Length: 208
Image (cartoon, rainbow, N blue to C red; front, side):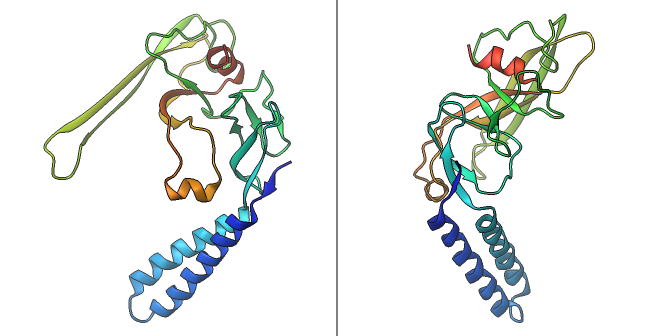
């Protein structure tokens, strides 16, 4: 059962009300400052309403933090057993489920082969299509060094599908209560992942 973390909820409510009160005082003197304060105040009140929460994973029963008392995300991934479940009904995503957009994060291991299944519908794959992520940016504003990143993955497909994947970086560190994550105490474990639509493909690729 997911339980609201009341200390976190109260914290966000108090901060939100304080920021909105400050924004009201700033309105006639610094309009831009008042807008910024009001924005963050409303954001904090929104966090208080949805409710930071914790609860057991419905599959492995280990404690999960960083959840919400009101349903926000369509899927949650347990960092312990790595399976996805739907917060709305606390059940694992059906193996034959195909999401409308890429949702399920398959870690991209160097040299590792993906299963010979279509990443959209999980039927036997007949071909591959290259998915590419690239970015370039300066190490800092003062540095002349440009850091370039290029990730390429051969995503498998059946004859009927193409696309429907996304390469992003996700944090795989175990979850902690929301206030602890904001304090910077949480360690990170960022990995490059291939987000796919087929849950069956995800299970075959990531839960070996």
